[in-house]
Amino acid sequence: MTQFPTSQFASQRSRLPNSNWQRNQNTVQYSSLTKLGPVSHTVLVALMVAVLGLIYLVQVTQTSNYGYTLSSLNAQKSDLESQKSDLEVQNARLESLKRVSESAVAKSMTAPAQTAYAQ
Image (cartoon, rainbow, N blue to C red; front, side, top):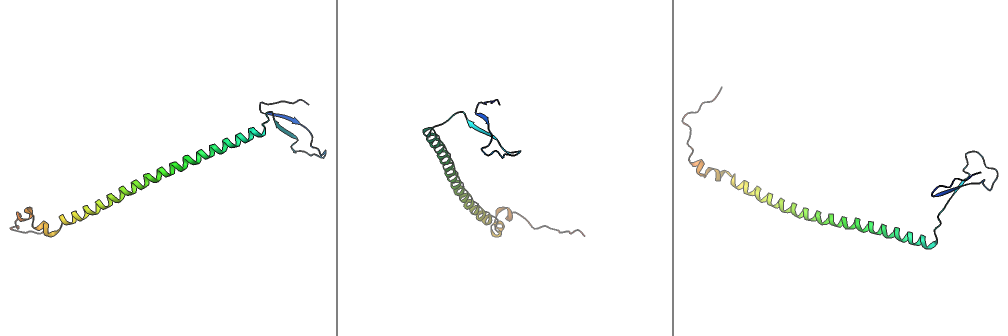
């Protein structure tokens, strides 16, 4: 039987050690053409750990930056809320009945001579 090697795997068709194989059973074994030694595996594992560590550090740094931005926005919000309450007090003071009745505009008003109501 002929073998068709691919760029990454070489197909080797062989029967299972047990000769009682049946239909729809996998009888093909794939073996890699490139073999890596223990040093290469160690280097690859170390590189993967380093990449995962860098990804973790980037995420933690980004989260802390978001925290600083959030605290800054919360401080700005509290400042605006206090400014709003001060403006509400000032608005209430300016709209008070006593102030309106003592204003120059109210003093220049006159009472109507005649009052007519619609029926």
